[in-house]
Amino acid sequence: MGLSACSSQEKSADGKVTIEFFNQKTEMADTLQRIVDDFEKEHPNIDVKLTTVPSAGIVLKTRILSGDVPDIINIYPQNMDFQEWAKAGYFADMTGKPYLENIKNDYAEKYAINNKIYSVPLTANLYGIYYNKTKFKELGLEEPKTFKEFQEIVKKIKDSGNSPFAVAGNEGWTLNGYHQLSLITLTGSGDAANNYLRFSKPNAISADDAI
Image (tube, rainbow, N blue to C red; front, side):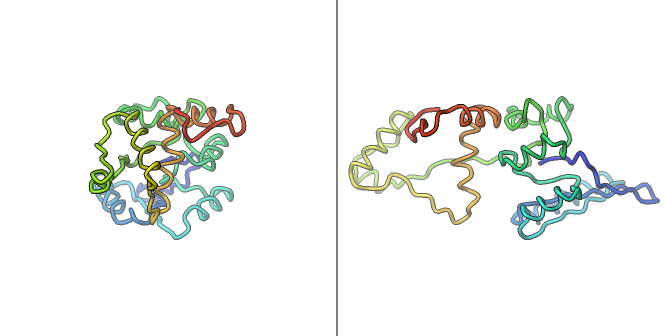
């Protein structure tokens, strides 16, 4: 979640401030509205306008490039668009702000850009792998306890003529976790992930390489 450096907030005659919260995840609209309602009860001098629109990514890009930047944005910090916009000064630098101490495990620092923090996490997701116990029993496999055992099991499944993995992909955004987010997690930060890819020789990275 990012804060705009080019605020469009309005102040009314009664001293109330209106800010816009631009939401890119339509499935979260109801939940976010409840959060907004609770926030407004605690801060009666602030009105929050929650904006949820179809094709939010395209709408946001158009608005930012035209200078109509929302005050708060549900953003994807791993995306190159966000990184370029942050470098161009569209988002507020939150580095060193005291409220960052409320965020656990340095999650905000993980997505720092050039060592500056432009976003804070709205949610945290836990990724895992489900396995078919019946199939494991048929193949004589046991649940792996280490990554090495996991790799050995994958090989055994392939050698048996079966596919080790399947990703349903019904919700396309979930694939993001297995590509961009996993690389950021393993390398330590968004900057480190970019450097890992940038300074690797073409075709030098294999799917079997450990990061």
